[in-house]
Length: 442
Ligand SMILES: Nc1ncnc2c1ncn2[C@@H]1O[C@H](COP(=O)(O)OP(=O)(O)OP(=O)(O)O)[C@@H](O)[C@H]1O
Image (cartoon, rainbow, N blue to C red; front, side, top):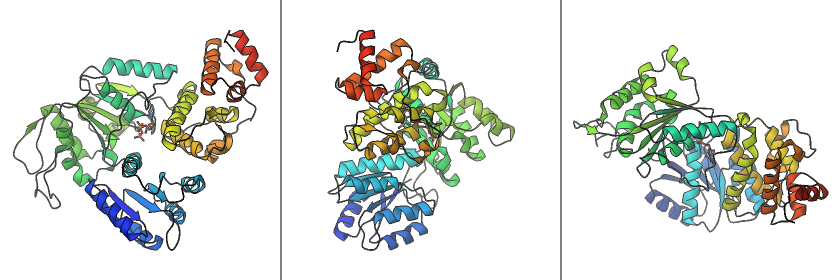
């Protein structure tokens, strides 16, 4: 499916130029010159992304954002601003913008941000992020250790894997990890969000079609099975497949062959399946909504993704990891979280799991005024949890963990004892005592 973009921009030359360029990059693009016009167009149809100038002749882009929120419209919005001051961007992010970009717009940067924003919304075939040590972390909790032990065991096999877990726990990341650790690494990894494919297009998404085989089939299209041939096909939200598509899928898996719609030729496919779900599929089976035979095909091995609440030891680890990412993306240089912020992060429930933590940290990185993220920047949801503002004592940790935390804090602060003490939530004197205790050179 071609992703659609609405450009809201009053500079006609610039918007025409953007429209042409994005059109060449494979997007379907429409434009609007005013806020009022944009609202009309948004009310009339669904877009995958809105790219809006901050300053518009009638009302500015921030107004557009609050209007979208009032309509409970979740289409991602990227704000373009000539005023690169942080404040406008901050306001836009607070109003729910996915991202911002300053003018003059760098085409490659814009394209990257568009892909990221659309990816977060998960259109059916999601562009696959690059996985490397800069954007993947396993965690150190017992739950994480167990999960990645299983991942390493199952990855090299041909078994189909069903990943079970709540939204934002990292199911797609784990699916990709399995692919990377398998013999299929280097071959395609194709992700399909079964939850957002319209029922009537599902067969074409999976198996492809021949030009003219139905109204709207303007070109030949390769389906996901063919795209993933030799590699891995990842079916996200697999519980959402219609019964009819479940039957077609089962047949394809049993026969290892598919036939594009309108074609009389069958194509052999060699695909490893990884699926993910956040619902109870056994319950769906008992209600007659999911086929048991397909379930067993998909579920030769089950992985359970722990929620962030079930792995509290990993919260600060991930928070710091996402902070490094946000520092790079936003060109900021924050050192860490102060003691009260660290405590608040650890006490919060994180219903949206890693995805929510990543978003909270990114916003806070943008908003922070000093070297550390404080409780003020973490947002209302997190503050609503009862948090005592007394810095946490270091002694909650065992000695080795405590020593490692101190070494990390010193490294993060370039050996600045005052800042390291602040980061650890202790006073300087305590820090000096601890340095002596652990024989850490001063
Ligand atoms: N192991 C990880 N290391 C680093 N970042 C991660 C990891 N796992 C998840 N993330 C971050 O959290 C976000 C959510 O992860 P992912 O999309 O894999 O979750 P999901 O469980 O598939 O969510 P959903 O059920 O909503 O599709 C990712 O975009 C990524 O930024």
